[in-house]
Amino acid sequence: GEDVEQSLFLSVREGDSSVINCTYTDSSSTYLYWYKQEPGAGLQLLTYIFSNMDMKQDQRLTVLLNKKDKHLSLRIADTQTGDSAIYFCAESQRGSARQLTFGSGTQLTVLP
Amino acid sequence: DTAVSQTPKYLVTQMGNDKSIKCEQNLGHDTMYWYKQDSKKFLKIMFSYNNKELIINETVPNRFSPKSPDKAHLNLHINSLELGDSAVYFCASSQGARVNTEAFFGQGTRLTVV
Image (cartoon, rainbow over all chains, first blue to last red; front, side, top):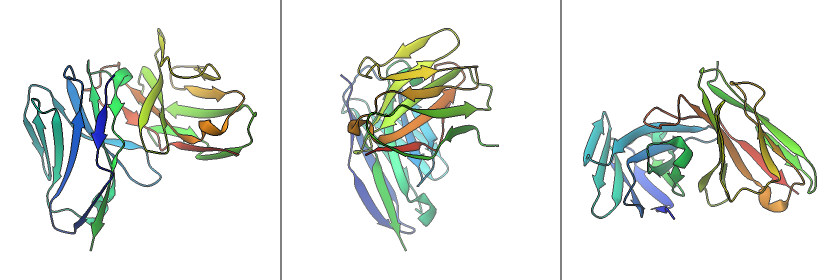
C-alpha cells in the first residue's frame, strides 16, 4: 500500500531557512501536498504540486519534487515563529481527497 | 463564520459508551470526509460522502458510522467505544472529490476513551 514518511522533528533559528523532507512509495501519485497544522487547529493546505512538475514556488515556500527518488521537500525561507506547527506531507493517486495518504507530520519549532 | 466546524472539541468518555461527533460546513461543498489522526500523528481517511456515494475505508470497524442529515452536515457515530478509539478525528469538505480543489479541515475533536 501507499506509504509516506517524514522525520518527526525539526528546529531552526528565526530567520533561517527550514527544509522539511518527505518520501513516498507510490509511483502513481499524481498530486503531492503540504498541509500545516497549528495547535488546536485543523489542517490548512499550504501548497500542492502535480507529479509532472519538479518545482513550485509560492512566496516564502518552495516545493521540490524528485520523482525518480520519490522525494518531496518544503523549504520555508526566512522562517518566523509563526511558522511553528506540524507540517504534513500527503499524496494522492488520482487527485482525490478520498485517497489522500498523509505522513506522520514534522513538528517544526522556530527558536528566537 | 468558521468554514468547517466540529463539536465537541474535546470528548472524554468511558469504554462501551456510544457517542457522536458533529460536523458542519458552510462552504456549499458537496463532499465531506472523516479522518482519524492516531497517536503517531498519522492521518487516515475513514469515510468520504457526497449525496450520491458513501465510500468507506475497509479498515474502519463497523462500530463507526457516518450520518448525513443534509449536504452541510456529516456526523460520526461511534458505538461501543474502545480504548483504541482514542484519537483526534478531523472532518473535512471539498467541492467534488478531486483534491486539486482544496479540502478544508475542521479543528479536530480529541476523543479520549477511559
